[in-house]
Length: 158
Image 1 (tube, rainbow, N blue to C red):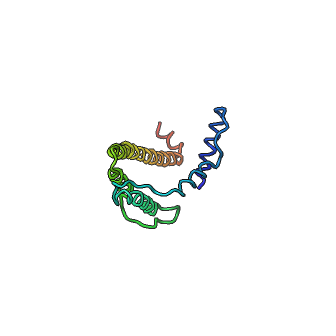
Image 2 (image 1 turned 90 degrees about the horizontal axis):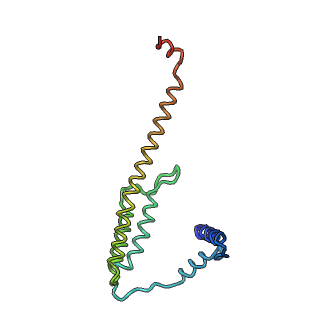
Image 3 (image 1 turned 90 degrees about the vertical axis):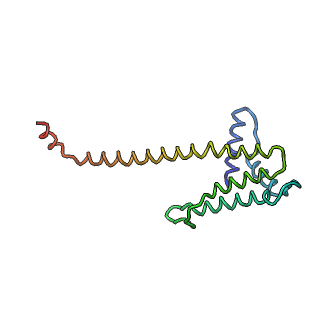
């Protein structure tokens, strides 16, 4: 809800540093309102798949949000599902259904982005978990060394 305002502040600040006046702070809200009043325009060559693509994408994101627990509250639904993959699949087949000469490029770009981003995100999450586990281990080891009696260590030295 406040994301367009934040982008307006960022764009206004960039413009001021560039010596320009910049767009109004609420310009993105005006643009969103204008876009929401517009109707949909469909090609005559598209089928129901093109119209179902955004609907399935939005439904997949909402269903994936139901799988995320919020604080101490458990998730609304608890079953394993690859819902974001379903969203990407429907985006691809909707792009292939347009009947345009550029449909293959749009669908291949969607596949390429997923092939580049998902492995990098997986590696990043693995590194984050490894660093987190190592931090816990180092914390426990240092806590054990805090409880050592140094007088006993000096007797071991002799």
